[in-house]
Image (cartoon, rainbow, N blue to C red; front, side, top):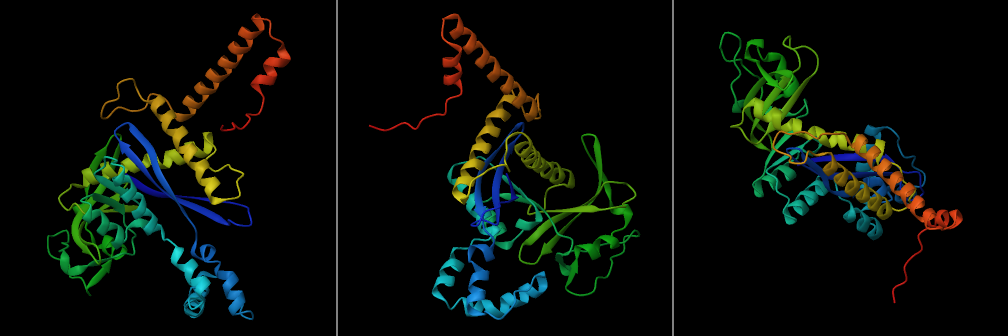
Length: 352
């Protein structure tokens, strides 16, 4: 199961930017979106700028990130004294809060998963603690500026001698240049080979974890990726293989936006947009089932793409329309009546 976010601009008076956090289920060839939660930015959720202008009418609101953060620290304690702002402040939920709520909901609905896959945004103590409490393993990307506890591991040079590290902490980006090239090993996944180094360390706030530093080339040049997991007993190959299963969530967004109108809507309320997204989730799930082989097994892949499934469904619909019109024309029905029926707007049904 993976957590991710999708951002979309909405040009309305009420909503400036909507983001949703969602969970996505992967089990062999079977994969589909499970659930979502809408995220509202703090300043939008609390109507922050409106309250600032009310309480500090002569103060311009900074536009740069650092200056705005300092301004927040200055004015927010005063704004929080106002009952209306306090109420809105309490309604705000961070992405971590929403991620935890999504995972709790998945477990309540008995979604069968064992491992959480998420990006570095969600690597927070609260989410990791929840996973530990629920006895779920996890793998995440690790930001390169995260600190490691230097007394929790021993790094050796090419000759096997321990490398002395200054201070109680070292950032990942400072550690990687110290790793000797001979410590990297090739890990082959399908037609790709990664050059990896793995080490068990302690992360402040998260405890004992295993790191995997991965380069795409044997020369150890270019960018690298750092994965981290709570399973210190797993090999680099297993960690990479599992995290690669997060890729389908990216293709889901691409397919959803290209073929299913995920980011195309004309609603003016968050509730309506959420309904639209849920319908896209359902449509994608049915289409994905159509893409699977008749008897899917572990390791098997879809036999066609979502795009191909959409085109086949469109052709089947056109065929059904043509056959319907032909049948009723043969029965003597007028063309105008057939077209009127096929293209009439659906009328609401009155309950009696």
